Amino acid sequence: MKEITKEQVRELAVLARLGLTEQEVASLAKEMTAFLDYFQTLEEVDTEKVIPTSQVSDLKNVLREDVRRVSKITLNDKLQNAPSREKDFIRVKKVLE
Amino acid sequence: MQNITIKELNKKFEQKKDNSSFYVKSFLKRIDEVEDNINAFVTVTAPEGLVSARESDQRIETNKRRSKVDGVPAGIKDVLCTRNIRTTAASIMLDTFIPIFDATVVKKLKDAGCVIIGKNNCDAWAHGASTENSDYGVAKNPWDLSRVSGGSSGGSAAAVSAGECVFSIGSDTGGSIRQPSAFCGVVGLKPTYGRVSRYGLIAMGSSLDCVGPIANTSEDIATVMEIIAGHDEKDATTVETPVPEYSEGLNNSIKGKKIGWVSEFSDMGLDREITEALAKARCEYEKLGAEFIEINLPHAKYGISVYYLIQPAEVSSNLGRYDGIKYGFSADKSENLIDHYFKSRDKGLGREAKRRIMLGTFVLSSGYYDAYYNKAMKVRTLIKEDFAKAFEKVDCILAPVTPTTAFRIGEKDQDPLQMYMADIFTALVNLSGNPALSLPCGHDNHKLPIGMQIIGRNFDEETILNFGHQYEKATEKETWRNLKTVL
Image 1 (cartoon, one colour):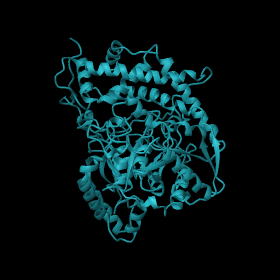
Image 2 (cartoon, chains in turn orange, blue):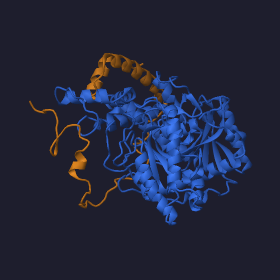
Image 3 (cartoon, helix red, strand yellow):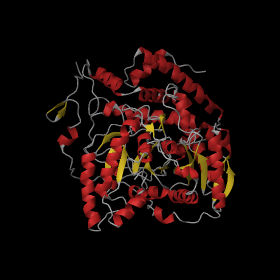
Image 4 (cartoon, helix red, strand yellow):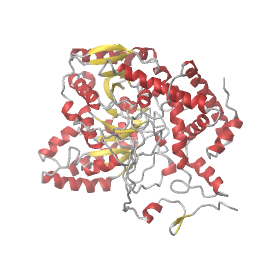
């Protein structure tokens, strides 16, 4: 059985940019191990010659002409949900020291 | 007043008996009376609703109604963007988010004159089968307030069932329209993948998400589908296949039609009372002249595994955008940019969202991709082929929606795997893409509604709505149809 360790949970949390408490780390390790245990049933299915399905519509590469259009949405509209703003910019923490 | 249909409202409007304002006011009053007990709405939009009702009144007065939903009060699940009305996805991450555009389905409904009276509660990010994951509290079942309304579109189903709106628009990624419809005794349709635009839907699992209606009758579902279905240049997964007039096909005879009966489903932990209700429904269809054919879905038993590998993978990607910078919850005491991501996502996302993001990140990570994610995508192919093979022999499939009727609040929320099992008969259909209708077919000995599922060929919503309507007509005098919710 594949076991997910707390260390693995911490590494994954960094990849997913999730801050987790120690309690969350412990319960996630347990839950994820249980999920993977359940998923093991898939191993009995022979899929050697099967092509994976990533989407179920029969559409492929839906393209349109790249035409310029004037938007009715203003810059101010677009910024109205930004948590931190300065004039026409979104304020973020310093990226480079 | 309670459970009035679109069809009945249309009669009233045509006779100019009562106008839209009258009904919108009575529905708002009903919301006032029952919301403390049900909690089916995150936001009630009374002022906006009353304004659009008055516009509708004018059109009723001058015989210029735009459609059959003109003046009809509706709810919208709070995962669909509504311009200038906050849209939370039932997560505190989006507690103050005010969209600057309407989702395509919302725009189509508004253009048709429909009156939106509120945003329905659901599991946060549509993750769940009970609405217990909502950051705005659980939406309770109008048939028994100690039980869940189902999920994730629990608020939508509860609101229709409790008479708080005439219909609601929900979303269905693994059963989120059909399961709460079954739990609350109403009708819900998951359309074919690609039939209804998802533009403006807060994305969960993009290869699975479908938008569809919840209403009191199959006929009302047909009416709403005629308005919301169709190609949308803003959603590249929608098809250009013309939208049929679903209402026209409702009275077609089903004599000689073939219905599939899935052999494997009887071994998949189905409650005895649901088995019996389905057997009765089968008899009704046989009386109507349909023929049942045993079919096999040999890979059905892998549905939950495949679904809970693919869906979290897509969730982990779709929820990556919530970074506390562009919009949404933003942590106030962060040291630097990366710390800001961690803190904003830690506080803004709930337990279930984190669980899915973590699982998804794991199955997509190098070293595990082939063993889990790619394997799941391959078994998805086999599930899709199972359905295609079955539909060579039958016109539709009759199946359960849920293994049990509505469970108690708190019964499963500490055991995620148990909660996931609630999707066992519904998630399969999201994996294959087919349309499926969930409609009431009886009640158990606790008076809780039982639902059944009619699964159709791709883009053949017409047949399953026809089957739903014929069943409703045949059983309209059944005693269980007279049972009432507790409010």
